[in-house]
Amino acid sequence: MNSRFTVILILITAALLAWTYIHHQYQESRQFRLQQLSGLPVYVYMDNAIAMDSLAIELHVNVAEIDSLAKESGREAAEALLREYELGIEPNTLRDYRFPNVMTLFFKASGASFAAREQVLELLRERGVPEADIDSQAAAWGLVKTEIDHLTRRWSNSTLFTALVFFLMFLFARLYLFLAQALTPRDMRATILESIRKSELKKWQSIKLLMIPFLVNVLGYLALAALGLLKPLVDWTFFLVQFISVLAASVIAILLDNTREPGVSGSGPSITVTVPGKSDALDS
Image 1: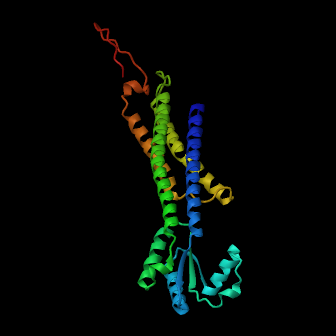
Image 2 (image 1 turned 180 degrees about the vertical axis):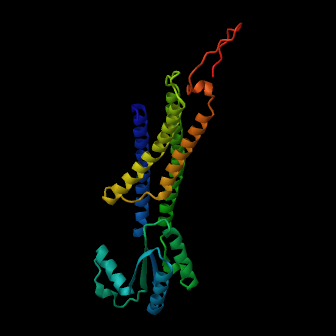
Image 3 (image 1 turned 135 degrees about the vertical axis):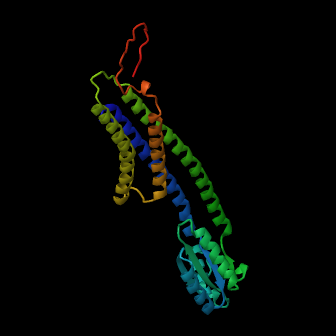
């Protein structure tokens, strides 16, 4: 393994690791926005406590993205508000008032929670709960979804651009190694056995450039995640995109190298044949 190949191997590995780190930063930004959903519960107000209990069981069974569900009587909810906001109103003054029961639905910090919230609202409508008795915090949820959609579009565009740049970088690096090997001086002592050895070297270099950076990248990320130094936010889809970029560049580089004319590849010795009466030299 010569120094030229080693340097290129290290650079490709470092580039893959940097690409993974940038993607992890995107996932952290996305997760931060999704965490806001846990602070945006849906409130349902109902007078009938028995109907609320039945509805709570149905929601808990049918909607997996509900993180937790809390039920309070109207009086308990009113007293909690007085204590939390320190309004200076004595709880005893609430005895003569009738408040509806409150069911609070908290959702998981997941992209699936947007669809789950719509599922909950649809189920509430089917059970006859009036729109006026549902506080869905539509504006806050809409804002979070807009931010995440904008972030996702930016990530998609940047990922495609980065994949293209990495593809070109790997392609030209591999072609450079092919060309450097082809221009190595050779003489009449070159044998068929040596040509086979050179071919095997090219094959193993291609395999090493394909597998070593990718394995170091994936295993390094998994090790950091296992040690708790990174949150496990990168999914296998992203690693698949990386591998396809490297594999495509490697295959195209090999195809381009195989299409070079033997006369300019430097792969065989030069023999000069002199024909009587002719001064032309024939290369084989």
